Amino acid sequence: MNATSVIDRRRILGAAACAALVPLAATANAGALVGAAAMKEDFLADSRYRDALIRHCDVIVPMNDLKWEAVHPERNRFNFEDADRLLDFAREHGKSTRGHALLWYNAMPSWTREIASTREAERELRRHIEQVAGRYAGKITSWDVVNEVLSHDPAAQGTFRDTLWRRWLGAEQVDLAFRAASQADPKAELVFNDYDFEFRNPRCARRREETLAIVRRLQDRKISIHAVGLQCHIYGEQEIDRDGLARFSESLARLGIGVLVTELDVIDWKMPADIAERDRLAAAKVDELLGALASGGPIRQIISWGITDRYSWIRETFPRPDGRPNRPLPLDENYRPKPMHAAIGRFRKKA
Ligand code: XIL
Image (tube, rainbow, N blue to C red; front, side, top):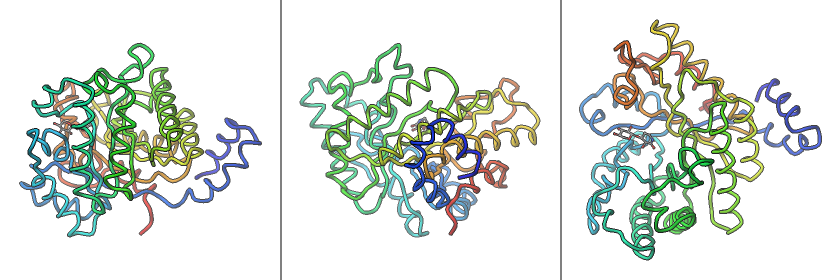
């Protein structure tokens, strides 16, 4: 917590509300656990990748191996082998782990297309969560319980994305997933995870409001939820809504809900070609983002979606028009820390 954000909060909230924020400010230096999502293929192939995970992470997240497609390839078959390689490695090196994700619409195995009723959807979702979160109870300490349930543009498309889960369960998908996760592992941190909260536009503002409403709905129903995960795939060319994010993290804190950054990277497709300039701007964006989010109290975890520019989904999904390699992550392609690494480090919990 720095002086500027306290002043911002006074301005936004008024003096009366401010008294209630003192305890948050007092804990604001506690800092985040820092980590990265890891790709199994790169992890297995590249010893420098493994070394980087050991050296730079407090937390390791299997990037794809706990998605339905990987872990539940057939209706009556689960496969934990791939996830276990990464999770065992993490444990051997004293790292904590997060799970991603118990309910998503993407990376679904083909058998789920056969689901054809509310009862069946409920049964399969519950069983999946029991099996997966149950298996790792006491081991994976934080779960993305639902991922990307909000529609891209809730004002135009309604709150929930049009998916298998919305079709059969509507808003209950969220209740059911959190209830099942809490039963499967009563001690895990249960997280609502989604994207596009951070830019200055009405769509992101609306997504923050929808999220707060979902949190309140769960709390009204006495269903456990502990944190909101902001993916934070940051478009380098867009403006961060600092006030909006500060207010969001403060509203969450007042509800007793923490904040995690779960999939941080900087989408640099429209950023300057010059490398030093691009890296500097990317770090400044990350600093702005994290500074605003820390306004409600310490960010619990800051996870980047990968660790080195050598391997990143951004290279395929958001290639630069000039054909130069993307630089979305904290380490460059030769595993050297970039300014973004230092920007994250400023919010890291002191050992
Ligand atoms: C991405 C992975 O990084 C890729 O390796 C995979 O091919 C597709 O999924 N939001 C999410 C993540 O919640 O699961 C996605 O991960 C990136 C966007």
